[in-house]
Image 1 (cartoon, rainbow over the protein chains, first blue to last red):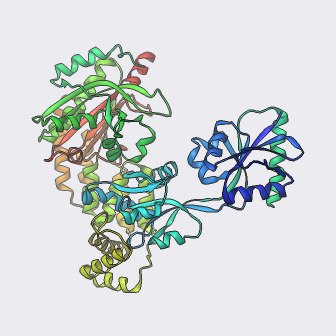
Image 2 (image 1 turned 45 degrees about the horizontal axis):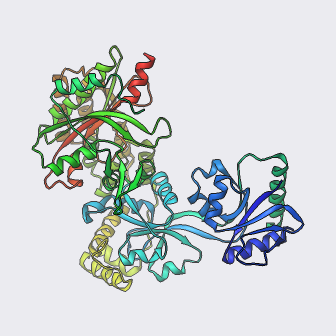
Length: 233
Length: 371
């Protein structure tokens, strides 16, 4: 029997995840062919590695198709309905930092907080004949934060699959919800983060599916989790 | 549940007897009006699909909006009462995602007190017909009275709007009140702008903001304008200079605590207004006229409850809101209210007042099963 650990298939996140695994004593024997998306841990035929995109990892953990995975907390909360019931964050890994934030044009000098935005949204329809528009790829997080946390109902989400920061200047949205790590892209686009507009301080996490497994596999999951926690320090 | 409830014919007969014509509403509806009116949060709960040309469609999650849209499209004469009975589709935490609702939307009747009373009486009569012998508790609230109290207290517009939005939701209302009582509202404006705000120089402020928008490459015609922002800056500065006083807060709280039979509601409200030294005369007059109309419609005003803090979680209600339920039950059997702005929001060229209610037939069926 074996368990599957899903790792990001691309970029910096992949490198950092592999480094961390190595530090935890889980040396991944990379496939000779880069196009292969399966591997295993050296000396551990019972720990399979699957290279997937971060959002696929969140989905597969939610479905229970993989046991463990490294993905961003933002992606996990966004992609997995009922994530708290289906998955468990076993460790925060100290890399892949990104904040999911609410940002408005800098020139909105009267808007510093979500309460300000609530006022603006409520008046928007009367003045402009349409609702306030929020560009984001984070539908679920946006709805939870605006409607659930702040009781703001009257806004519309426009889906944005890239260059979200450009939406306000382009006129396709008024406000954005996006990730930022340094804030420089926001500044370059004349946007500012609201004082209470941090929806989530996200980083890469080791996540487990809460599906039922055999006692052996449960022990393997616990063992990997312990090794990675120790490596994170 | 896709079979018509056994008691549906009784309701249809009562629609006819009370002079409300049955209307036919499409199951598949454009999704936009629902998301626009009820808010983006509804998206999780409706069943969305797309037409071949990319239009977002949904299975009707309720009847009020489609009835109003059909009315506007048909340019039908008013006043007119539309009755409906059919399935609605909503994903719910509890209960099946498709269930029956029945109700009446009353559009364009300018005699609003009479129309309000008739709406409550219709809902009550329908429930009585299908739940014979069941005790029904009627609760009514009124957004107009709340707004009149806020205005009489002399609260600035921004505060009144915020409190009115929170009306009917205790958690939101408490949070808004706490924020207005002791919230820190400092803002860090650049000195040049702070000066213009203090001087109340709106045109200069708007010019400054316009220049900033140009620098950021924002089109001044696509979203909030420089004048919008300048106006709200001034409004916000005004709000920062005042806090809700203990006296005002006490008056608001004692108003919100009013919970009396409709028979005593008018006298309780005028006693409150006198002791708090508030003039809510006009709103109170409308309220009293409605009580008379309710009494005239044959309902027992002793057994109807007026709850000053009672609102329903839909922001299109403008005046009366009401619910009818089995005493002590946590979910109502029927709910409704007045929505005088809704038809304009949906595209009607002239203002058309409206009032209506909806009955949850699955809850009625459950009660009949246990009765």
